[in-house]
Image (cartoon, rainbow, N blue to C red; front, side, top):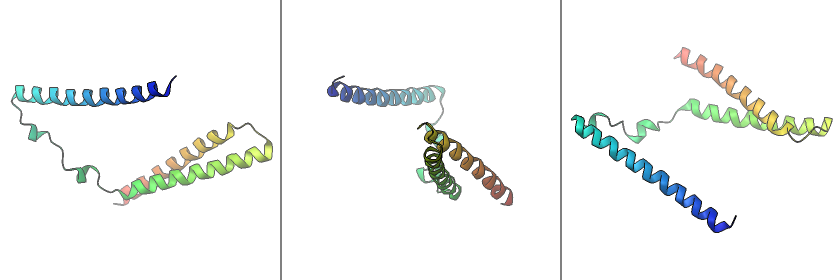
Length: 115
């Protein structure tokens, strides 16, 4: 496929997504006006409230990155020691990443019970 077609497809897809979002927003507002509901009643809080910093989020992403790195090292160790196929890398990364998220769940649930 020619590169110009790929660029065209990317921008066309972006345009369709933006148009769909704007169209659905307009339809939603028109429906609210027809029902007699004030749009200010449905507005959420400010963006600061939506994207408020969460210390547990930093812990989650840090643990995920750390365990995926450990999985990569274990995959490399298994590949060099046992001459396994290259599929051991993504497998071990996914397994250790999942273990990191499970460990985060237990840490976060303890912390939430303590508060």
